[in-house]
Every structure is written in structure tokens, then in C-alpha cells.
Length: 364
Image (tube, rainbow, N blue to C red):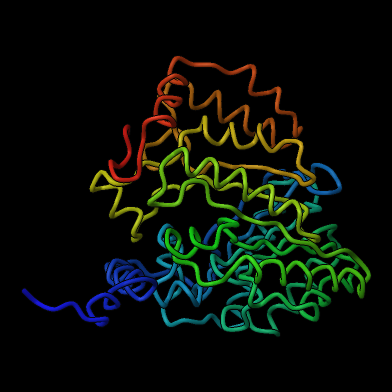
């Protein structure tokens, strides 16, 4: 019998193993993307600290998230939609902004007061969006009311935020925290930073508020049901994560993102092998209901709801529960969930009670 050595135990474990697997998965991508066209753009409405506002959401097509190129998060396939080569020139990024403004002009009666800019990475990372582009975008939207900028906490800096607040533009940083539990973030999501780094980013936003002409804050994005958690574990982790975020100064909004099965991800590999089921919409509703009294705005927008790859119940009640969730987002009133019921709620309750990590999901 062979003798165990430390090398045997360490080889192929932890983040290195995650990253190696995900680099191989993502290498299967064949599509390429135009650096002059945004990944997506749409009009909507969002709940903000100043009330419900019409919004223009922009997903810029950049060279992709730096962490995702190393391997990245187990559930995130957005890097597969990024431009090849790792960077996009300033002129191309501004062309993307022009496309988004044209979309808004064609589909809205007036400019949206809320602008949301995502890169599926970090807008504040100058490898993705250079300083020249960042400042030009700040100037472009200087006449709006509020802007949301996506970033990992490493790149949140009061001086960068001041480029937006000096226009009187209320500025929020959207941080993909995923969970307040460091172990879950590392082992299930494969994200490298700790909750303390999130708290430090919130402190930078507070400092920018104190020094600028407009407020800066943080919108925390949490992941409902990362892989390797049972439904009950995922629900309890979400509730505790929302409560911890609400206690951090500068974090005024929590967006709960139910995990959906994206292409070229470890979650997709597990999904096809029967090792992962997206969360029940009942779990999303329960988390919102249980945290409605926290001192923060809590919202959720289940992507792909009702599909096998997105948060779903029995398919019969999915649209009704989704409608209640959207109603809650705007009203923050948990009684909206009292208006929705279905026989499958009993199945969900049974899953919460009986599903264990070593048996895998009990239902599809």
C-alpha cells in the first residue's frame, strides 16, 4: 500500500483545482463578439434609496473579468461573452455607450434617472475599463440622478468614485459578494476575497460620500444556492448573509440572485450530471419574507425563472410567484406572498427537511 504524503493531499485541491477545471470548460467557447456592441442593454425600473426609478441597464462588452480569466466563479459564464484578446479600446467602449443611448432614445419617453453599468467583471478595474473611458462615461451621465457601477471590492477606491460624485451623481458600487460566509464563498463559489474586503469597500464608499458632492454606497449581490449546498443550507445562508450585509455601514441594498445554469461553467457540468438543481422560487420568496424587516432594501430578479436552468417550482405556479417577487421588489411588503399558494409548496417543504448534501438534489 502506498504511503500518503502531504503532496498527495494538497495536489488538485482548493482554488487551483477549481480554476483548472473551469479554464478547461471555458476553452470550449467558440463564439466571438463585436467590441463596438454592448453585450446587452434594456430599460426597467428599480427600487433605490430615493424610491422607485426608471433605469437604463448597460452590460458593456469588455475583455472580461480578470478573476474569470484565471478560472473564476463556479456559476459565472459571462466571461464566455467577452471580447477576445483581453481588452477593448476607449473608442470601442464609447461606441457601445452610444448604442445604449440610441436604444434609450428609441424606447423611452425621457432619459432614465438611474443608470446601471455592468461589465460581468469590474468596471473599476482599469484593465477592463481604462481611466479615460471611466471619466468619459462619468461625463456622459453627469445629468442623471444615480449610477450603479459593478466591481469586485479590490478596485473600489474613493478617488475613482469621486469622478462620479463630483457631478452630483449618486453613485453605488454593485459588488458580487455572493455570501457573507467566507467558507461558502471560497469553497462553493471559488471567489478569492473575504467579507472583511467587502466591509473595506463599503468604507471607501462612505469616505467618498463624506468628501464628495453626492452620496456613494454599495449594492451587495448575493447568490441564492451556490453549488454544493442543500436547499435548506442555501436558504439559511442567504438569510444570514442579508442580515450581515444590512449591518455594514454604506451597504443600502441587497440584490439576491438565484443561481441559474449558465454555459461553460462548473454548475452546468454538475447540472447535466444530476448534481445541481437551481433554487426553488419558494426559497427566494421565503428569504425575502424573512428579511423584510432588515434595515436595507432587499430585492431579487430571478433570471430564467420557470425554466429547468433557472429558479423554479412546479412550473404551474412559477409565473405567479415571480410576479409576487417583482411586486415585493417595488413595495417591500412581505404580505404579497400571502396571495400565492400551490400544492408544490409541500414538496418544497419536504425538500428542505430531507435533502442532504451527500445525496444530491431530491428533485429536478
